[in-house]
View 1 (tube, rainbow, N blue to C red):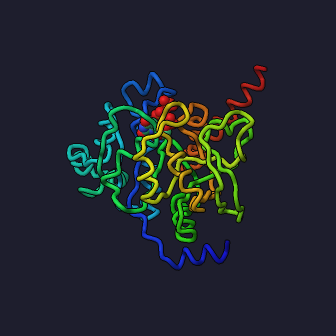
View 2 (view 1 turned 60 degrees about the horizontal axis):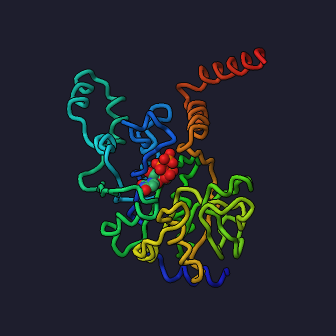
View 3 (view 1 turned 30 degrees about the horizontal axis):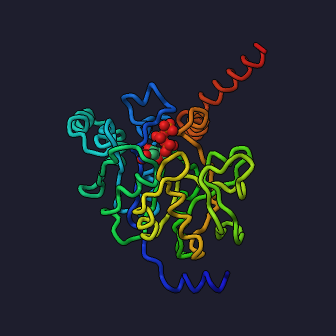
Length: 307
Ligand code: UTP
């Protein structure tokens, strides 16, 4: 493998500058909130989920941001636009700190593009909707409901793994065997530590049939071939067009790698995961941690006393 990897490396990989953010799902696990608020606008402390994903992509060198949206998601478009009235009011009030915070939400004209997915036909279909904007280039995919706390942002770690392998790189983490059926799972061919070469990949395997407990989470760096594979529109698990299936087609070429990222992933698409992330991000905030920590201690003590 070492020889093979360095051969790939010397072929020089094309830089990843485009990222797709599929945000067209219905977010049914957060109804009724998501009846009128896109899930991606829900906030961890004071920043919406989508902001964490955008910041992570920027830190990995992404220059073009492609959103796959659906009806009812216009709040997302407004979030990344300038807000002249608000900015003028803050400027007049001398609130330069707040103006500074707003800067992160502004995107350069043309850096962000929106395509529509008319019906929620699955993650693979959502990614395929961005095919014309991606063209013949490698691209990243970030699912904003997976929030990853890490010293070095997860996608930046993956870009390094991509430069090393030259192949498709999917973020992976060990999960409890009984949880594997909720994920795409890798069949491990060659385990090199942080990087594994996959010899198979299956979406939502039946209980007890997962090939390993190495699960794929919502960060990917993919070759244009995966986009071509999506053209076939083959329905997979749950009748949806699965991104996992399109990636798995590249496995026989030895071109799919799992990457054990360093960091803590929160599944903010689920209520429990969202609450866990809220606690973790709240405790990590210097302006809140003391008060919040004391409150949590009191809550736990009260709960114990009531038992
Ligand atoms: P999820 O299945 O976790 O999100 O899809 P969901 O469908 O919005 O949520 P629930 O299960 O109903 O609560 C993972 C990601 O893929 C996007 C979602 O927006 C989310 O970011 N997605 C999913 C699409 O863009 N289109 C789809 O057809 C399906």
